[in-house]
Image (cartoon, one colour):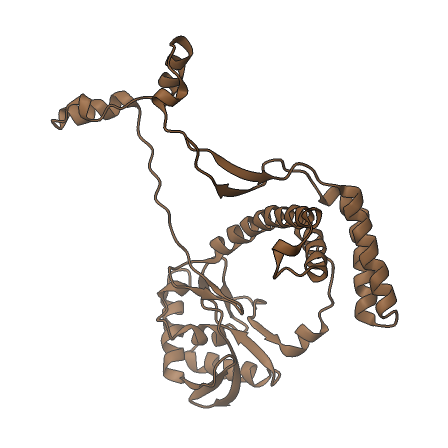
Length: 330
């Protein structure tokens, strides 16, 4: 099918969008709206900045040709020029063209596609709040309540038992948030196909790489260095495990062979699950007393009831959680 036919189909699809429809670019996730369609261009307005931009028909044709000329009719999104993302997004409105963010491509299909990158403001307003089945949710709820009840600007004036409770809850939130952060990061990494930052509403992320090294077996390393003219003595070092074995059979003390630095720290020793459960019940009662007729409050009540039922499952004890402060000793 010719570009001209596809172009007019695209114009028709764009004209049928709701006036408040928001489209998002596939790589930088920049939101914009289509404000006007014309025979030779489509005009867009960026949502987060005061900028209007005309997208020319000739540039749409260039992207169309590139996709069409590929053997599989697939074009990698990271090959797009930095300012060409909106063209790909608008093309995804066409019933035969779609964007696959997971694969990092825009493709043309002989079948009608269903993937469209377009949302409206009404959809966000109609989304109902639901309680997530996540440990970090219950931990954060308890921590939020504790922070609201205490003057955290003056920790020195807070009673020790209250500080212990704050530390315990902070430790729980840190652990559960880190677990969730790792899960989210794994999914994001699978969707990043380039080294440019990808932005959301509150920040941006970027694919990075960390280089790690581990030595090959000792004989391989020493033989290779000897062949290159490096004496073995220059690279051999004291083996810590062998030093520890020697300490067991000699009269030497640990201080004779090691520089020792001691670190004092606070370690979470226990979690009172019964008290945490009681506090959640108290939050529920307070919400009831504050506004029994408020719909949002009623929803929070229901969430906390379910949270209470899961509290034993969602809380756990981790003796390794600690807060370090440096204190050097001889």
